[in-house]
Image (cartoon, rainbow, N blue to C red; front, side, top):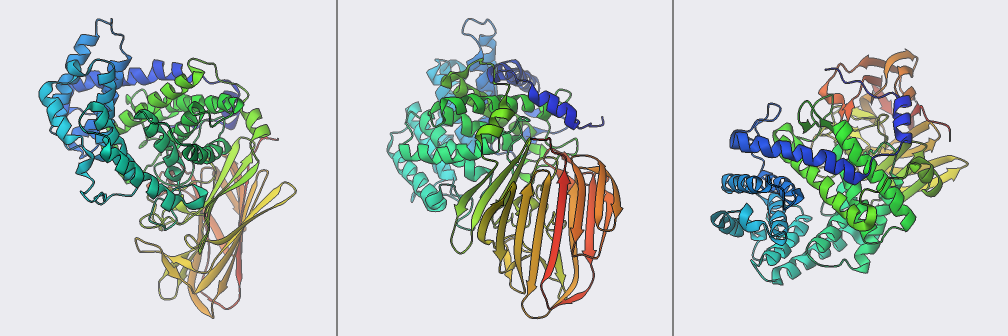
Length: 610
């Protein structure tokens, strides 16, 4: 089936209408999807097949916990006088017996024990889980499986202290241990957060390398959620940090319900992350009453987009893998069942938070775009870190378009992946490609040196400055070393220095790079690639015009020649939400660099008049 993207006119018309209340979207859609999975699991058990994938043969080590959580929502949403409840409880018990012997790690443990606590509170636990299985779960669902007796994590990123803390608190709520471990793990979690978020309040995903992405902004919301989930109240300090995350969430809000456009694990996760931040911010009164109204309107659009865009009725599943979409290997199709359960779980519990905040079945505001235009800054910069290297996120709002320029270091395993490049990401205009590697550096000139080394300006950003000239905004920075591709970690190469200036204005984005050699440098070739969602390209000199798509024109100066070609559905050019259509490649041949070289590109895109 050919996937036809919505035209800008249709998208604008849809966006101007109010979304359905979030609770209605969840009740009328999410629970139906869970009912389908429940029946399918009962019928097919461990031999279940979903769109050609066999989830229980995939090695998904979170799956038993996600199954428990997803099906647990069905039980908890079934009325106590519903005659179908008894059979559902029996089926849940059978599936728990089936999965109890399967591998279940970290997040899976958290999902499972959180569900047991809710079933216990609802008075359903004894009927939903057999005594023998519950005893096995008491031993298995333990933070000690990934934390040493010395309180160190076992080969895991430090944000897993939050998972361990939650499990310890939930074990206490089950009556399986006292609160002593929870207190220690809470201290570990908050110490980590302070160490790697510094004075700016956003958590580095690495031990100080400077990787800031969706999760760096989401983490404080998760911490606050875990406090509430386990009977604690977040401190004023945590609420202050949450407000910073909420500001970013509101600054990227839009009428399409699209989410974060940079970093890994995007697709629907880039969208549900924003609902998590905004729902807990509303519940804790971190938002003003007016902000709550429009944060809820945005959240309702995200929920609706999940059902209308990400969910495929023919598959009975969300689809992050077809229709020209590409996701990280970590979220490959082998995890299809677990991804359905975890995303539905996110939508359900954030909806419950909105309900508790007073928005159950409330009709969302229809004037979201007008409110955003009036109340959110057209341009903002959030500092993540300053020191030897600067890390920051600049956001430019241009009518319905949201430009996110994330200037960070992807660090180990991510520095050469285009979702971590310092690019002005805009849905349907500029995107990275999950797990792309450095084979096709999106919109970054790549220098191939005479010794074969390949260099791009990706990792070592210093001296970020912003400015304004009328309605034109500028962002500039320098890199004293380029990033040498080919290693798992970024490698400094000081043969060429770089000064970069972006200008952002209505309908136009320009990047100007000045590359300065240190001494004379022999360069084999320079290439610059742009994978665009627009197509029907025509080229004149170094300017490409597109007859279809949001990008109308792309022009390059400083390189000798440009050519364009269709991507023909290549996996190298797929965004999380769909395929790029055209690859424009500009290049220059051998040269001896003795003087500064300026390379500039400009993207002109369709933008509604303000």
